[in-house]
Image (cartoon, rainbow over all chains, first blue to last red; front, side):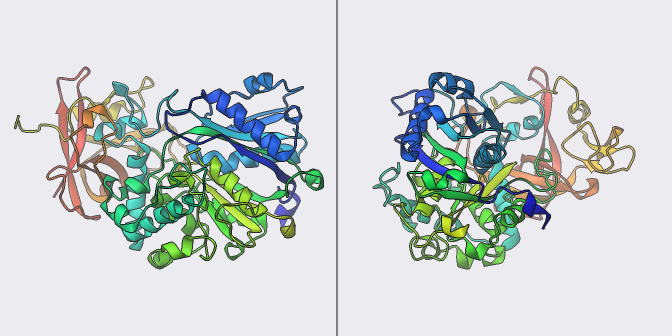
Length: 395
Length: 149
């Protein structure tokens, strides 16, 4: 147990969470930087922590809102931690929390905000292909063939995985239905009041086979933030403390081998990450009561759940049915806020907030006894990351 | 217009140009001659694709290039319906394939599968390379497409 002396387990707690109103892409009345500030202040309010206590920031996917500007805008006495997770887009969500937690646990900083802000009306959208006249390097081997958007890049991986394991389209459909089902109970959700049926899914247009429209994430405007403090402060917090039990990031051997040459191709990139996560958290898949699994595309959720050990790939058609994935009764409630498909594409940070709500017992689709709550960030990219939160009862 | 489609996809997509450091020049120069060239380590003989400055197996910088016949099999595929680029508007569907080359250590390449875009695609099906010349482009370039064989 060499890990036991070097671990983040139970050293840091989530003190507060906050988000702005979630908007359809391009519909935010506020600019992106202001959205970031609003989410941070709401997280402070939730935590009962004064904004001037913040001394660090962590984000991912090249968030445009620079911590030094945030620190100046908020009048912070000092900035002690300014951190960006490299690469992987939404795969950096749990890693950003872990990076912040590592800073708090080791005394680099005392009160770190993890945030993500997006105003895609102000800036470019994710789902578009490159608009440049020429490409070189790896894109030169894919873009001229019309393989240029995230969906086009990752449909190829999902198709191979589904082929190798005989996974049917209905398995992907169940993932989409679960997200939309949960969004109907969540007033924050962009798709609140817009339920999805199996018939609507089956009739929806293909984006890129094997992904239909409802297999693909939304694109939205908004911001979300959470605040991490040392576990020693847990008793003094306004809200029930939510402990970070474990976190891991990375990807398999040569996952980024250029032009789709990863030796293990049909993967969400979690095969090495998930065992590290469980080892640090000291829990097993059967202990996890609720999962938020990043949906860039449903095929990635399928693989994430397999690679985190909830069922075998060959069992996917049997396990991935809506009743298994819906709170409160399903054995593995999935994406209980609606997630990237139906709550908001806040690049997966909304999944972290929802995982915290589950541990607190505050979700709009609450799972009873959700003492162990997992988030998987950004399947199929590299690096990916995942984490496990736990209640005080797990410590 | 019922003009025969010369290219797998409409013109106007980003054009490939060799990167400033010249890493993939042998590939693009070979394609313009109707030849398929893949990286192969001069030291341990491992195949490597896409190109890199070092051999991922033995860490030798002696990465060489070798010509292959251009015969492979479909490793994965996708049929694209939603256009993400203005040049692709009304161009769908089209099929992109990931082809593995058993003759080159099973390295994989992306291309389009020629023929009916609504055809049934079978993983494992044998394919052969077709060189799609874009001689009027500046600079001229050649794409490597695939058809079932």
